[in-house]
Image (cartoon, rainbow, N blue to C red):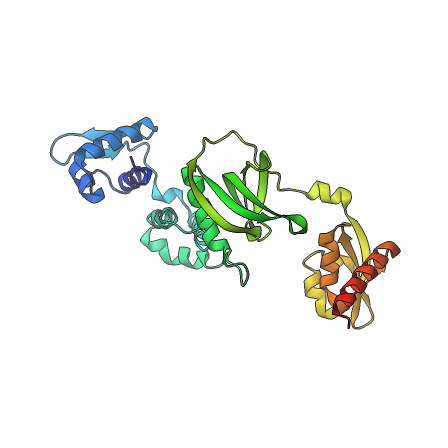
Length: 310
């Protein structure tokens, strides 16, 4: 029994007043007996469909259950279309195409132009400008594994360049801070792990299936933890990197220092990631204080200079 056919039957009956079994069978290219089984399944799911006999009879969803197209406002439909369209840029599939078509079927002709204008007022494009070309196909592979409860295997590059081979039960795809991750139970670690797609290679979907576990969703909000461990360092930056520094803190952290520079109270954690951020600003950024962070920056810059020395 195909779930997408059941959904399509529901949508068809919501849109039309009544349809006969043979008419539905012809539409979906199945037998009338299959349609009768589908109708029973839909009734069991809690959507009341009744059968009307005689001339002009057929199946219909009980009138008190039918969705009035007017229940969706212009703003409602615009928001739904924006969300589905943004997903379709990265996570492709027939179900998204079908969902878009079904939502559009709720748009009254007299509102179509207005909804199109409102939908286009916000563009959410999740595809990267440049970068790892594996992300798109990996999303499709993980999505297929999620739908069919199939194991995934891949090579993973963790912190400090450590490479391991993983076999994982996939449970969730996650988009966080413009990066794609998936969450699953890792057989290598015997625990749940969050994997960043850009750090994966040789992703393969396995023939072996698994029985889904009861799992807790990963913690994705680290604001409280960061607040507890973050400190501020004072840096002096050239105005040419102002836009880049604003990716990490707000403008109220900035104090003008002459015509060309700013002093910035920069949020900082003493780890490789944050040192790399400051180093990434090159000679347009100087760490002023605290002194021990400045000395550590100096040590790292000297190590880089050695690599490029004679």
